[in-house]
Amino acid sequence: MAQPTESPAAGNAKQSGESLAAPAGEHVVSPAAGPSSFDGHHPPSPELISQCVHCGFCLPTCPTYMLWGKEMDSPRGRIYLMKAAQEGECEITPEWVEHFDTCLGCMSCLTSCPSGVQYDALIEATRGQIERLHRRPLRERLFRRLLFNLFPKIGRLRILRLVLTAYQRTGVRRLLHGSGAIQLLPRRWRAMEALLPSLERYEKIPGFTPAIGPRRRRVGLALGCVQREFLSSINAATVRVLAAEGCDVIAPGEQPCCGALLVHAGEEEAAEALARRMIDVFENAEVETIISNAGGCGSSLKEYGRLLRDDPAYSERAKAFAAKCKDVSEFLEEIGPRAPRRPLALRVAYHDSCHLQHAQRVSSAPRSLLASIPGLELLEMPEGAICCGSAGIYNLTQPETADSLADRKAGHIRALEPDAVATGNPGCLLQMSAALRRKGLRTRVLHTVQLLDASIRG
Image (cartoon, rainbow, N blue to C red; front, top):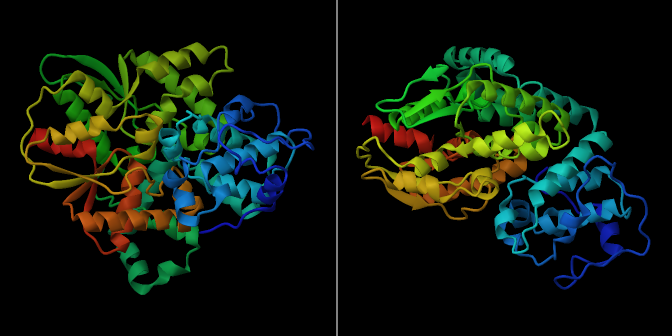
């Protein structure tokens, strides 16, 4: 839904003590607090909740607050709802859940919060509680099961890619859109179809690619799931750039999905299983660094230590794994350029992936890489801290809100008139490409590493 109303849970919580309006540092506790509405498995930490002083610095950087102006759809409002549920002031009702479902998890509030509130840990813990304690309507459960039984499954995605390639090449897609029959599909299915990229070419990634010239590093590449099958050119460009910069690149074909979609949606158990498999695969690969080229995946890989903290067989291994993980732009800036860059006469607008910018705190490295390309003019996107609406599966579960944010981003792109847009996350690439098509704009959206690859290859 595009604009949720303020829930009874929110109203009851506010009536119990107006801590949202209290001066910074004050926390009003209800005298009628009861048993917690959360279970005992990693509920949102009271200590982390208490770090929020309700100062409001997060408000202008929160996409849903920006769209609707509703307190309970802001980070501090959602933290208040966590506190109310923890203290027994409200239950986990559908209305309460709605405020967390409409959160993009973009983590923009992390970089705008002067108190250092760990909203990422709080929202993931809360979503885990929701998935265990709240029973969604049947239609919602079925749709989420479909997503979680499809996107993290590489074999199933491969079959889907073959089907959708035929869908594009046979002209069926053109017929559905041209006749208007596509409008007969449910809203969420149309949202999924609108994100489909061109599938004309698939680039298979070899398990081993040797360094060009003297070897500087031996690195592993996390291939992703959707990106591996539907945006293979990004992985191919990443491998070429790393090899050109003197790296042996190991890309194990048996690696699974990293689990980012699952952990960000509260599906902890399934995410943990995938994390264990990833650790096993890359321990066997014996690499110095593990490279991610997807902002959302990278932030999840770097948090494996927290995800597997209760597993005595994997907790220390998970920390060691996470310490090796770097975004491709972060790694390339660290080792410095060796391959010569050739000119690209392009005006390029850079869009920060939320999880790359806010969760991983990587923002200067991709800009530095783009600025190193001769002839390239780098443009800054207005509202750079605001999410494009992709946010994992958000653009499928909340398509109206996601489209509102993407259309806003497309408007900024139109005003800049760039030749291309660069970003560091496949979800952002698909989301903005779809919005630009809706606006009738032909501006290409590319991964940062694809531009660097084009410059190196000339």
